Image (cartoon, rainbow, N blue to C red; front, top):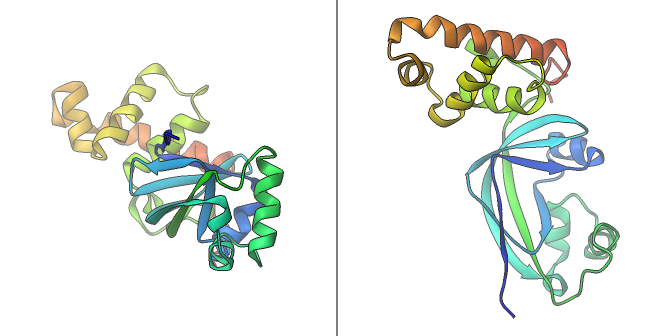
Length: 198
């Protein structure tokens, strides 16, 4: 049987009930049905309708469902293999024992419920602000702001985006202003914030 591959981009969705386990470090992996391959090493995890954390993928393992172990379950925040299998069968009622699953192990790079006020852009990279802004504020941003943010997702550089869009590095104030506005709206709307750091 041929294995169909699915790819994960810059965003990974989880159920809201797993957010606290991720932030506490209890959940250090997520298991997905099928052969899944992340396109990037760093991904933003979303749960409960907001971005939760930026993670770095440390390892990707493909196994058949029946090959999952207690160790796999613990990394995914479950107490045992049986508990993990019960949850996987609840989420995927028609999953078979011989089907492929993907274990994506990760480390948290940055929690997005706590921001660092002393850091430029509160410790976030321009591309991260842009990605989160485009996902959650698309309906309130102007077309020019969206164009700036989209380009920042590609360059992660205020300087490069300014040059690419305006051809004049002296216009970078426009890009900075868009980043500051996006960040302010994300905080005001509680999408990212000053949650308690653990």
